[in-house]
Image (cartoon, rainbow, N blue to C red; front, side, top):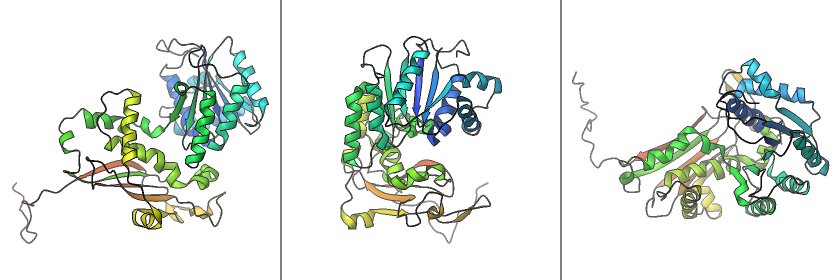
Length: 383
């Protein structure tokens, strides 16, 4: 489906999306692929295969994605371009736990003609990662790390519900895919401002001498959303704001702000620098620690843009007695030399006043306020 002369000269590739009709695929993945197509960055012979439980024709699936792309694509929908693009989109229904689904994937892959590179995107709950990886392996859909065609897998956060389940899931994935074939994605790191953080910090010599506890009073990291849980109710009620946002997105932002300068921009080197920040985080211990350093809350009914919206417990598919938090705030400390005593205020929530992701660095005040120190004698404008 080569559209421009700038299209990459690559082998035919198949993107298989588990959860193809879900929120992530509709809001993020398909609009992103359409934009890559418009920019001429998809190879000849590229195809998308959506997987889901619902029985659906290719045409109905394409219509569903067309509507979503119209809402969420960063570029305008050009009908003739979309018509060409959607010819690469296909759909298969099936159960993740059953072998038939993976046999159907294998048959579809062969129909593309010859061998094709395969990218598996697990846009599904983490409880389904294990059967998905095992099914792909048993159907012979995963090649060795250095073989051609290539096989890759992308897993979304959260990977598991707690430490033990995360270890179990990672072990299953590692049994099927080599580490170099595994991409654990955090889409917050793709934001332009986030990517600019490393440049802001390490390419500007003016900041490095000031970037420590001697000069910084505190740092605030905020990720606020205007929307409620929407169509993610069943997932969200089992996760909550802490697991959905803090343990991945916000901690990644904290790491980029607080990390030591890496000796290179190699992925492993940057990862190790971020890991040192996480190891330096002060544990919040016991009930008293939780009370002192954290806040949890749920959003209630409100009027948003002139429209009445329900509170969290009145949302569809949310239990009336749910205690899942939709807002969380944490006062964190990074106990190392650079950040000793500097509080990091982390907060995230749904149904907030405005949608924003921001990092605010508050520098310490100078010892004496020379200008306008006497409120009874304000300075006149000298104009």
